[in-house]
Length: 152
Length: 152
DNA sequence: CTTAGCTGTAATGTGATATATTACAACCAT
DNA sequence: ATGGTTGTAATATATCACATTACAGCTAAG
Image (tube, rainbow over all chains, first blue to last red; front, side):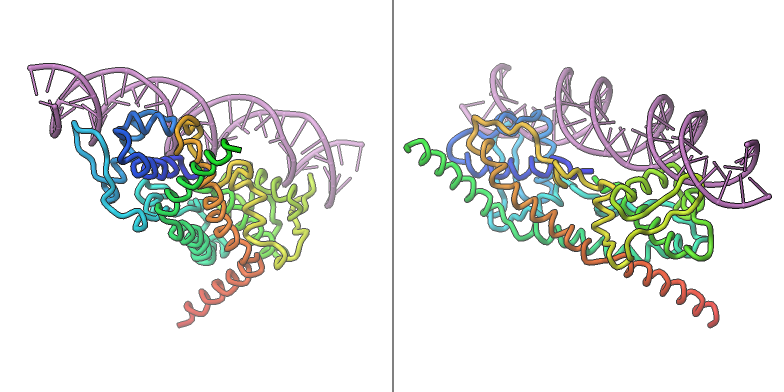
């Protein structure tokens, strides 16, 4: 199974909000066009980012704004904001009814749980190490490289 | 989204095969009883473990056997064997149609992909660091602790 | 050599979930 | 007040995890 695309959509949204902030009117339709999904999906993800205190929006008027500096927003923040994993259940779905009358069945949780949590945390720690400043910078860099290549 | 329970079921299966190897006839029904799922699920997972060269089975006669030493089987091996993640797609589902006419849309993959792969790998590396010898040993330990607690 | 017990696997059902889409009320700027 | 936008509910659809039934193929034990 996969972590839903709302995570990468969230990253795309924030990147685009910053990238186009002085150039275009960045409303949900514009973003939906850049991302390639329905505008309602964009609004839903933006709602979650707003609840997480990452962006600010206004009805009627268009354009979301970031409420944090790019270098204060990590991939992990977005991952959490859009609910990529159920915080209760964790990344790994454990079979739900191991038999308490079996010595293996009644101890398998005790033995496995912490290791699964550690694995999940290792992944999340990696996400924490990238900020949206990195992403936006790399994007601008990539765009620059494009125009250099054209000239050759 | 979550990684399917076939992974923890796989770990449970191998643990039980070893734990009960000299005591009970460990067939799919027995395992299903310990795990709390349908026997067909057990057979399916065992099939995948067999294809991965981890267990050996025989029709007719009951009882699967391990074909590797416990300390040569890691959680990662099982995770791969049961297909916990699509090897092509990866752990993170990227939105599929970013707009090539948008500078952000046509570069977001380039900018994000490696970081997502790194995060996934960090998790998988953790899974590699635990062997089934660890799991079985911890299970026996846990069972021992149970009987000690009874005596007090 | 037959029979009981088991495995391998296909076929089907069901519920959950991701994403798409329509619709519309609430709201703001002009 | 009106045009453009957001927030959100409601609904549809496809996919997937897991459950379940069914049965052919195999093996060991009598």
